[in-house]
Image (cartoon, rainbow, N blue to C red; front, side):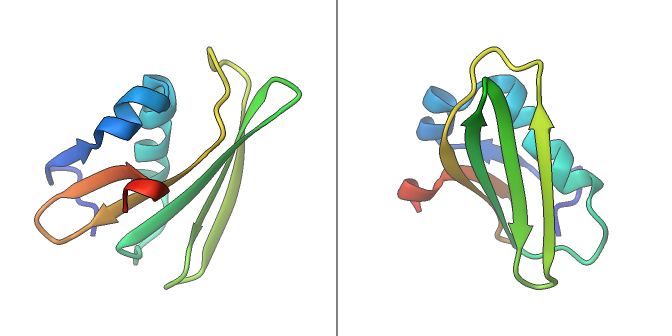
Amino acid sequence: MFEINKPRYITRGIDAEIPFDVQLFMWQCVDAMPEPKDYLQVFRLTEQNGLQIIHHTTEQPEYEMTYILTTMTKAVTAKVYIIDDGDHCTMLLAEEY
């Protein structure tokens, strides 16, 4: 799952709403997590005191990590999925699922 050489895509919603540096950070979070990896990665993005909070979870195997980013240009609030369907990986907003 989530091999580095597998094609990666983003949806129009991600492109429009999620800053590029946050997109890259979420891809890096998936790359850095231990194996095995769930096909569905869930990210909850919130803003707190001007900081970007990113809560990353999976169900199988259970995984949870929270990141606090201070160098972001604009903090956003959203729920983002990254899905590996076997052929490619796609980052999308939860409402686009």
